[in-house]
Length: 152
Image (cartoon, rainbow, N blue to C red; front, side):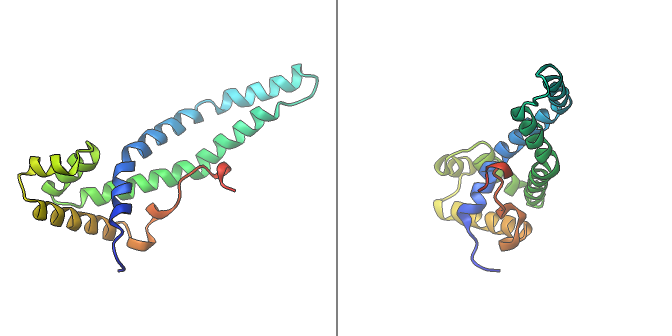
């Protein structure tokens, strides 16, 4: 395995709550597809045969969510949560404190009651374990997760 990109692994851990929130938001948007499709047909009927392209594009965007983006985001969340579950209980607590609760390094160090060297050695070891668990350089977590319709 090549050098561990510690900043990238920390970025994944810090992004996990945002990923979960975004996933919930995307799933909520899927609930509105039938209503949008119905509205699309009504516009065609009452709009003298002209369908509203904005509604059509929104339906297509939400179908993209369902078919590609949601499964990818779910997989990324599952992989990262699996990596966290694979850690020892005290390591999971470290991840929760530092990344889940976003404690600054100094506060996390103080909470653990360890020296700076011990803290950073522990951090390094945990990030290496997570990176290895998720597949290293070939991890799905390295894929960009911006919406497909915004990629150019």
